[in-house]
Image 1 (cartoon, each protein chain N blue to C red):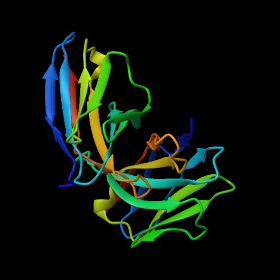
Image 2: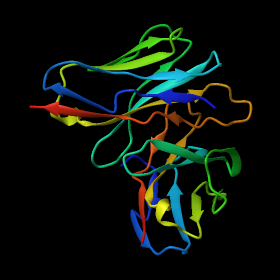
Image 3: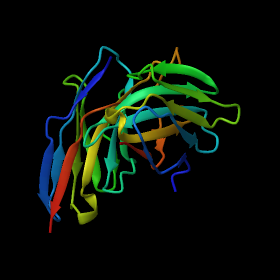
Image 4: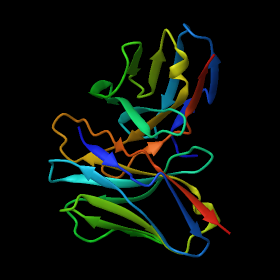
Length: 118
Length: 112
């Protein structure tokens, strides 16, 4: 099974500053999808950004961008101009693109808790 | 509102009991996934259904079972409950999966 590792249990950032959350994954597959999900105190899981492994261009969504290094199996999330509302748990997730069995569940990392300091 | 509806939102029950958690997927989504999140832990995949058929199983205990009905809603049945089963249970749905998954707001189960 694929494994997803988030080595930073907690991170903090000053409001308006930039922070990078790390994620590495282990897979033998060549095609897959990667995701970052945000879980605020409400516990709702919110999709932040997604990346297709066959695309070399890094995905961006407003203040959120990723640094996808396929050879290194690394998928970090950069949050620019951090806001108080960014405080949450952030989960990195992996999904195989191989759909023969139709099994396409997400594998999650253990999460990074981000604190935003006013 | 994400479009994925989970009921109930909270459930408190005693050890040894059986409960049923319900999930209605977002309109048009054929796949339903169940995840368990214990306190301050990541999400553990339990099981996936696609259009009524089981497609993948994760770390689901034998005491747990699920099904997806013809109207595509799904139920997760947890029996012989133990204290360690206390967790947040999420349901998610997707059409193809490549565009991410839409999560419900979860059912918080407390076993006392």
